[in-house]
Length: 109
Image (cartoon, rainbow, N blue to C red; front, side, top):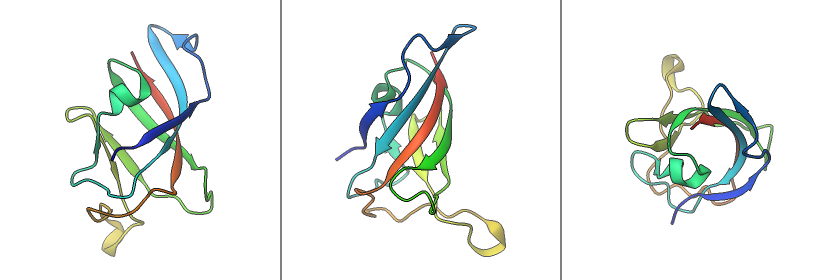
């Protein structure tokens, strides 16, 4: 399984200084993979993703899991709320996030 791009809320005309900006809704799946979800560039339709900023959790805005896009591995990692001493802990491999929808601002080319 893999995450699903539910919708792109912007168009490819959202370009500034050769950078493309997209706002996308991504729904996850029922088995979080070790090390995060791969293939994010292809999922959002960009050859290079420079940054992904989590805007909100669409399905339940009152809950928000921090996430981090890793450019070198093209993976999106999801974390639980801060643990001891404020550290972030990646969600457990195999976690079911199939009902979770996050909205991201994606900047890339």
